[in-house]
Amino acid sequence: MRCCDRIPSSCTVHQSTSRAACGRFLRLLAPGGRLLISDYCRAPAPPSAEFGAYIAQRGYDLHSVDAYGAMLADAGFERVAAEDRTWQARRLSWPRGVTA
Image (cartoon, rainbow, N blue to C red):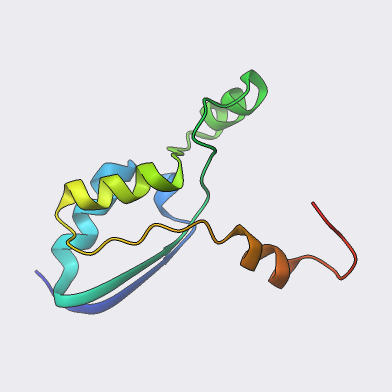
């Protein structure tokens, strides 16, 4: 189909099968198109039992930033930059004086 020059995706990948979503994005992007994903990730280490139960209860498909990058590359994306931008989200959404 390759109909889109740009695809912004916010908080959608973790709610689907991540590998399948990466393939769908690639099929929709026109040659030279760009994909921007902002979504929930987890640390590279296995989650705690409590967080693992939360992920399972919600049906989320959470991965580390690097794992998401690898999935995009495996799907066929050529130039992948997977970056943890938590600091930006905190700066935009947390009140002044509040720290993590």
